[in-house]
Length: 314
Image (cartoon, rainbow, N blue to C red):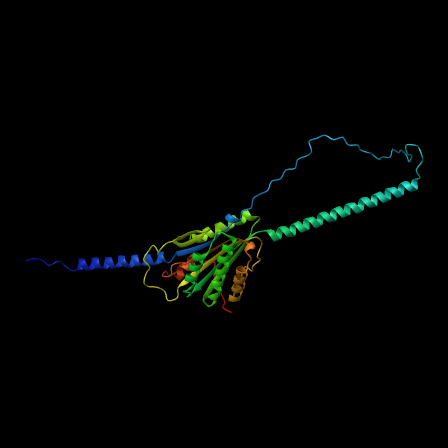
């Protein structure tokens, strides 16, 4: 009599397979929640050529006739031994001393004015790097708006940097009712070279938080990729999106480092969007998730952007 096989091994295998599928689906959702977009550019097209000048002296030798005016006097007597009155000598010495004093004060005053003016100009001309992070909850159409800006922008010119910055600021302002939290950083740099280093360090750090850059338009280098994993069907009803606005400016913006209310954030976005193109050395706008079918979990937002602070919506 044949012994029937027990259904228990089959049930065990089925449960194991189901568990594996659940784990794969969970992993797929986590990975898909970090697609990213990046657009903008800077510095490379705004390089200035240095001018070198050399002064050449006249190689020919010329004979100059120099007339020396001097007074050879000793003990109050001139060369012809004509005596000079003592009161006249004293008056001339006092006049000379007064003249020297006036000249010295004038020279010192001019030097002080030049130093102060140079110091003021130096402060005004120091470049600055700004990073503004904004997290939104439920702004589903913002991804499409940013995607369209990235596809349209010419990011090889200052007009392109201005366009990316201005249009991104306007897009964020249109979705102000979805603002959740924000963070602002402004760093001064000694010169443009240092500003460039800070700018790209910050941009690189933020772009490394993406698992995949699925839309890129940086310095007019464009690349678009489809999402490289299957997005989970268990989407959140209120998806999160985080936008990074990173820019370098020719001078300090002196923005308030604390953003407490929506009014504060609105004022900063208006200032950034209204900058003249001549003030913008570089601008990058990064956002995640970039794929419209992607979803970013609250846990991922807290993990990757710990400096975000909740806004008071006024």
